[in-house]
Amino acid sequence: MFENQPPPPPKPIKTLLKNCKTLQHLKSIHAHSITKSHPLPLPTLLFTLTNTLLTHTHHHHHQCLHYALSLFHHIPNPSTFPFNLLIKTQTLLSLPLPSILTFIHMRRSGVPPDTHTFPFVLTACSRLSVPSSLGPAIHSQSLRFGLAGDLFVRNTLMKVYSNHGFVADARQVFNESPVRDAFSHNTIIDAYVKIGELGIARRVFDAMPCRDVVSWGTLLSGYARMGRGEEAIGLFDQMLAMGFMPDGVSLVAALSACAQIGALDRGRAMHEYIGRRSPVSLNVYVSTALVDMYAKCGCMDLAREVFEASPYKNVFAWNAMVVGFAMHGHGELSVEYFYRMLKGGVQPDGVSFLGVLVGCSHAGLVDTARWIFNRMEGVYGVQRELKHYGCMGDLMGRAGLIEEVLDMIKDMPMEADAFVWGGLLGGCRIYGNVEVAEIAFKRLMELDPDDSGIYTVMANVYANAERWDDVGRMRRLLDARGVKKNAGCSSVRREFVAVDDDEWTLEKISLWN
Image (cartoon, rainbow, N blue to C red; front, side):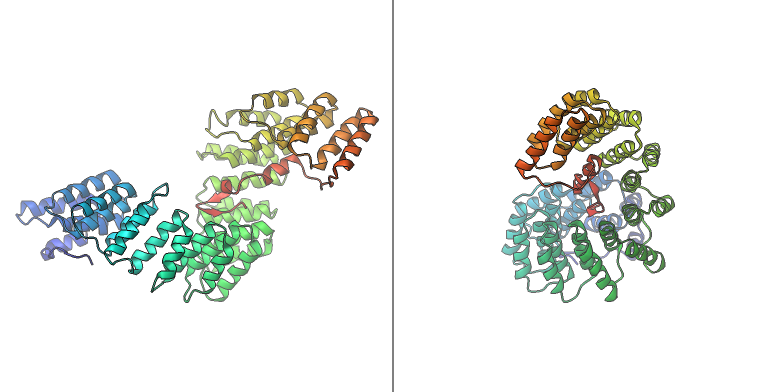
């Protein structure tokens, strides 16, 4: 496996090492070998720690790393083999920088790397939080030692470039590879999906000599994330027709596509498939996708049934219920599930608060909304955004709290947008406050002069006050600007339209596009 492997230990000790399950057990074997005057080779112990314990069980990172470093530092003149083991250990423990530093120490010590060195140190590079020149530098090292042609080295290089957004470099490595496997193709497909180049991703996918379930799931997720629901469902059907068994990623993406286009019948069929044939258990991700699909298709009873049956509920599952009830006019239930979420110890996020505030708006729960809004930052540490202020402006405006909305706008840490001022203008129309309506209208003219709704609402304000000259002026202004009339759209509904896609993602899989 590695170069310069140590000779095998005596059979009894070898058997003990093979059955070793815990770090404490490994230390006991180590101590026993010392007391019997047959100390185990330190690389053998390091090999057991890395290949048995870290890859099959979970241990405290600090203890494992401390023991690994202790073993390594007691090896006189370590060869490539122990260096590889330490680099692998640090990479498996999600410590990319120490892994890279060990590689640098290896090179400064004159120890030559091999085909097992580069995949792990390159994996460490891909896990760095920011792009750096380390990936290309290590790429150069692999070329220097004549190892860049190795399939695993090339695949890891593509992953490094892809993760840091250097898609052209990843594609160049791919094009120059003499041998490509499914992982090679999947890495390039994923790279293009991440930058929204679904056409190129599909061409790579179609050219694959042999696809696997990851290939299908990666492309499916891309279609769903980009709002191309029809194509995602078509690809899912093709996947089934070719005999592939979808995994959790594929099912979540397909259900998300059904939610986007309101394909309730297809979503139900997928639900039946999951229960009948799919080996994927109804985990939190799949159940959340089902809840989302039923909620967006208006079947809140089925959404609730799936939600309540799920043993594990994360913030995305709760959000699906809170938002679903809010969007379908069940404000009290939206608030109820929000409170249940808090009592269950789940930390709410910005989407949670947006959903419950919209629910309060639909139900006219002004005091409840005010209580929740006031605790967003101080109690739950969730920063208020324009969409949250927009919901409060709409709610309080329709409740006649015009002055309170004005005070809120003055205290906002950012400039109010068209949704906030639009909520205030709508409240002024209901309660006939011409003076404040003119202030809101002026600001809306600056922010969104092409929205015909503001002219219509302002004309209604003047009409209710029997200021007919001003009504005519609004209509002439609308005609002069050539603004086309919009279909009816409430400010609360527009707040949801404005939600960023990233806030609706689940483990890099978009559920709320």
